[in-house]
Image (cartoon, rainbow, N blue to C red):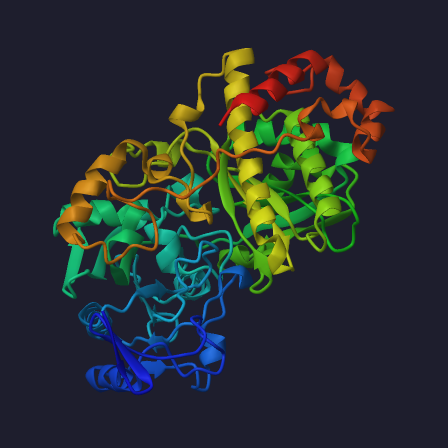
Length: 568
């Protein structure tokens, strides 16, 4: 029931301002009444409270993707676990919705809110403490990976962080955490020793293998849905040497087959000290999709150049390689994933050996996307190549993180400018993700590959479009439902994955848009296909190097196209 009180209105205990328009206007001071905001200010310690008229408010609601920015009623730059507890209790008392943000890198919208409260860790919880004797790190919840890399590097240590250093430590860790060191040391959650966490009832707990172990199990993979982590304690690793890295830009019409051959070879031979990210994207100095290989080797230059020689000897559009401190390694991809602009991410999985024809179809999908939607040139599909042995040593039920297997992660990231294309571009990302799943099923059908999509999940940190929780957490889902009922029975932390039977996923990833790139690549008229047909495809039909599945024929590709038409 709503009761009018002058310029305010009382709704189920929440006093909010009354506006002519039901949406929050840029001129309005807040959804939340000033008296309640003042009450919150008085209850907090050294935290900073911003409302829409405050200096710095506009910057506070900026996110990695412009497409998910929302105008919060209140933003609190929290200074302590106790202040976070105060914010949660205040929100629950007055029925005010809230979100939590750290690195602000999510493209799902889980760290943004319209009219409610943002608990922002990014300003006042940024300390990293290094214990060189135990080689452990204490990292506050608002840190980004640049903070960790630089602090640990001073002591010859490193942590498994993301491949981009302006992502938040909290978001990446709580969702699993893959990075350049994963082949050697496993996932970020595998290096996690302990957390301090604020729960839904405002209580502050320590969770580790020895203290609240069930909560610690849940935090390592599904932590976003269980509380606000204010501090992480990690086991770091020795990293005294510099690493070799670089990027090489290739024209796929000239080098597609040898690049895929090398990626398949690397997946077989890497001992965990090497890795590769293969981005299908259009660099600023090119007009059509290229293959951008980002390379990593945790060792001396001579060994690196020997390992990567098959790529280094190829004709390249641009080549940049060399030695660097590991503390700067995670900045190598920053330029491609800067803050701002409309974008989203969607995760997928790939198994090796990769099929060169499938990769070419992806390049053609991107080229068609360029023609269909204006200003999408920064769009990319990135396939990671790491050694999975280390993360596969940990059983899938040892932590809530399920996505452990002998397959590779893929991130699909469309970029666009006009809000009217939001739905179309997100659907395009889902469509590409679906094609990866169909490719795995098709290979299983055609060539008897051991894996199927039923055995392969999706990396939740790459899923900016909210897949069904069962896809992300697999057989761990049921235990998470039980623990959610214990630690957050009212579903206070409800912005990420659903662990309640009453919640239904809104993901539409089963929707796929068949198009002509689902045909054999030589059946369409792209410039890439034409070049291959005129010469360089000759090698394809003679065995395709290390690709063991064989070359899809037009007839077998038609079988695959029929699968696309019937799945979902």
